[in-house]
Structure formats: structure tokens, C-alpha cells
Length: 170
Image (cartoon, rainbow, N blue to C red; front, side, top):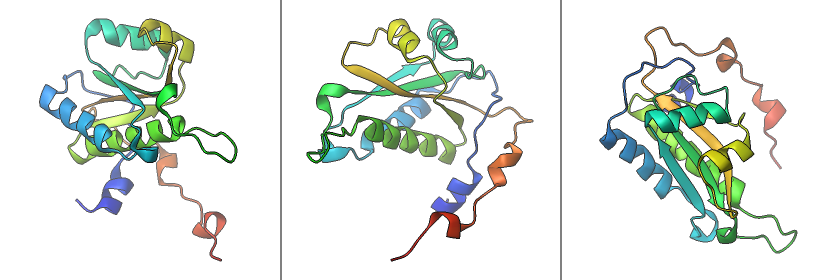
């Protein structure tokens, strides 16, 4: 599939079939996250795959935006492994984890798995429920599964700003 077509067709899925995502597909999605570029290739990302009934109940304690998905990934980073910019001390963790999440989301879409990137979650609940150590910071919960038959993009999915509002050329 053409990448721009994939990017245009992919939308946030908020209604899933209860069918589990097979292990080989789950591993393919994880592989995409492992291949994602990170600052200086430090690879600070931490990925937790959640598909057990108990694990999915824990996800529900962390966010209302779980949409009863049969699979979720928690993507975060280890603060001790991040690259740091010398000019102002900014670290790469959020950016690295976001690139990883994007790779996983687009890989899933390319093989028919719908997803929603959830940022609306209680980070302290995630740290507690999933026993994060003090160095690991959660960035995203990526809920996913097979889209329900009646699933469709929100009307806002098709709204785009004029490129002139976003892009400038110098």
C-alpha cells in the first residue's frame, strides 16, 4: 500500500470486535516499534503488551478510553537511557516513545488492525498497575484490535487545515 494512502485511510478506532489479535500479528507490531529510530539509537523505549483479561482490566483502571479493545500496548521510556540536548537539557524520551508508537500504529493499520493512540490516562495508575520502576515514564497507551463492522472515522478525521496555515518556506 502507498504510504500516503495508508496515512489517509488510518483513523482512530473506538469500537472493536472482541476477537483476540493473534500472537504473530502482535509480534509484527512490536517489531515495528523495535525498528523505530531513537535519538543516538539509545533505544530507551519500554513496551508492555497487554492482552490477558487481567491486564486489560488493569488498563481500564488507568483510562476510560480503552474502548474494550482486546489488545493494548503501553509505550514509555527509561529516563536513564535518553539522549540529552546540551543546549537546554531537553531529553529525547517523549519523542522516542512517540516515534515508536507511530511505527506500531501504522504497522497495525497496514495489516488491518485498528488502533487509537490514548494519551488520556492516569500516569500514576499506569505506573502502579503495571509495576513501573522509578526510571520508566509512560507516554501512550495504544489500544487495538479488529475494527467492529460498523466502525467508521469521526467526522473530524476528514478535516485538514490549509497547508498555508501550517507550512512555510524560507
